[in-house]
Length: 340
Image 1: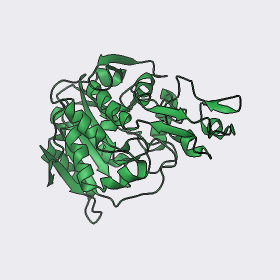
Image 2: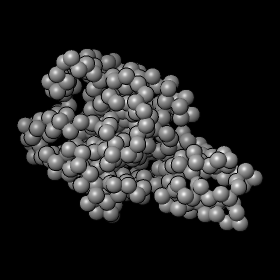
Image 3: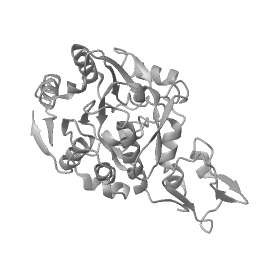
Image 4: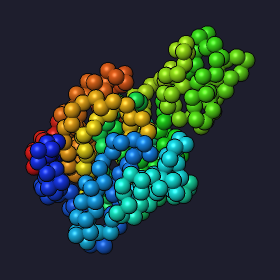
């Protein structure tokens, strides 16, 4: 399966080259007359300067309309308490970051109450797919490739697995990762609780104890602990869970009703989800387009220094991509990459 590609060369008009890319890749082939088309993107956390630039998304929206579709921008609300935690704040963030040219719909409703539990495969048996995603006729997934502390990197698979599910679905995925507190090392200083926005873990008898079912297994408490008493276990499970959730998301669409575009520029240490994404860790690479999430992510990892991600986060960044293919989603782990 061929992945079409445009190098990130700013001596050329990248917007014009992107248009040729979409034609070569058949990006709009998933759109039929009258389709309600979800443009799944990440509008960027407020304060984060690195996300897909709005003019690229505007171009895609125009092309969807030319193809007879009815596009809307969408993403699910966050589990954590940031500027995209509810539909109102999420919409305001989309406006602040330049996405006011098309209707933005929070995929999972006002407070993440809208979702459909669907069966899936792999490490999860079911996943809560956000309502606007499950009800859309077609979907174009627009991703920004970057690093991620728990899965190594985030691309199309993560954009679907995490970004197309409700808070309950997000928590379900994150809870596949374990967390252990070594009480023999814990001094009870409470710094872990202080840095956690949810006020976890509890300090009982001068020892940290994390018994809450609301803990999403993010690395914040582990990184803050001065004694190294907190460890995340089986981090690779989150990559497997992303694939499982992405499979469930794809199951809500008909054959050939999804398409994938990924932007590999401003490749930062951390996700678009945080206001401080860290340093840019690689040179800009380009834009990828494919009908397969497996192939589009694999193409990026071929072009990128994926070993950096593995070493930086002590996790195999290929896990999510290999797992999705193993679950039966069409695509190649070594796709042919053709410059458009």
